Length: 127
Image 1 (cartoon, rainbow, N blue to C red):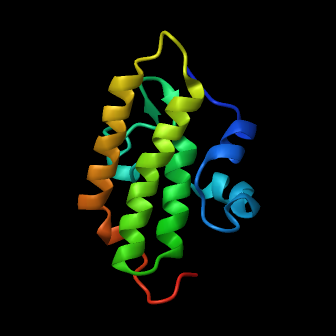
Image 2: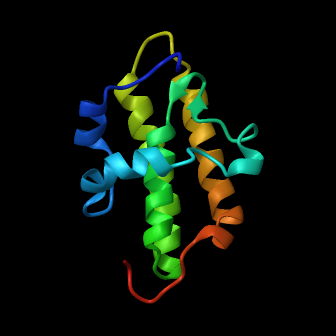
């Protein structure tokens, strides 16, 4: 259960995803571990100040599975940041700490950029 959430309909309309992601979503939703990996799930929450961003992490996991080059990885790491900001902007409530949440989005981008390379599927051709 999440304190704050954006509807899946709005997310489908606005989030930046790879081709075919929404077709894969039902399977991806079941297999996605959310933000972080098993060992660090307590340090990398599926929320930003109570706002559910799990789907953004699932999109990022899907991108990493698809893989590609180092340039692709950097693009996907930028995408997680952009998608978190999109979720924050879609929520847009007067009582939500939007500026602080966007700073947290910067942290997610920095962490995946530094620590994510080991999980990325490096290949010359995107799956």
